[in-house]
Length: 402
Image (cartoon, rainbow, N blue to C red; front, side, top):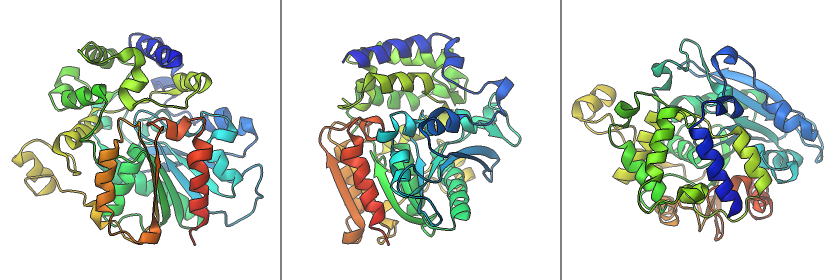
């Protein structure tokens, strides 16, 4: 409880202080073209090789990708199976390597004989550049998770596939699961994906039990972009900090325990990991992305961004309503591993059950489901017991795919 309160105290101080901008490591105008320091800061210091890549999406976003080609144990050599890790919202690829090397999934995978790749979504500090747009330009932030499905995911998958020459094991957390499921439902990327492990899967959000999350979702369905006058949702900016503080002031919301208020009661985080988190996260995303997620909460169905009204949707889609992602269309022979927690207030068990119901016709041998009673949202990435409970299961799952 003490570190949860510390988390909120420091987070609030960040929200109301512009001086914290640099502390969180966001790329500013002066070094927007600077290469990632992720390898040096988080990987090579543990004795692992790490390579930096840049790849450009077909809509002009320049993405940073890190590669850990081999481990310190488990041998080296060619033909190591590639694994791509995709983070969730308001964080970046660093979230995978915040714990010790012995507890971090990328290093565990590398030591288990895999070729590990870490993605960084557009708008996060290592993927802030664009061929023509600057992050200070509102047009840069005119995207939602639809665009991550259509542009970011295929671009990074193609990079890994071309560099490795092999099909890819995929690991997604939170929003990283949503974009994968949406893509697979359209029959995309499945020719390059060998299997997928989905942690805290997000597809449906109607049963969120977090009071803060529900209030945020309702707020984003209003005229939030008009209120902010901003296309970028940056937690370090003054307008966003005012917005969040106003939510925390509402009855029934206790932001002194912010992490629990948002994600559920994580069982297994330690103070040192929280310190690393506070030095590196949160990361910006687009306001439009949050609005799209809020639409999912409201509508209870998974579909593309609703532009609000028949005329606008007709202009974008040629249809009065946004097209739906039918997760029942995910190829039945695609090996899937889903792990979800009983304390997760975002990836609520009822919503996961809705997802599992859509996968009920999946090939029996290709659907593996793990339920972890005590885990909440963050436990699946930075929990001290995640290695023994979840990560080792992922390694076994990947090794069993032929």
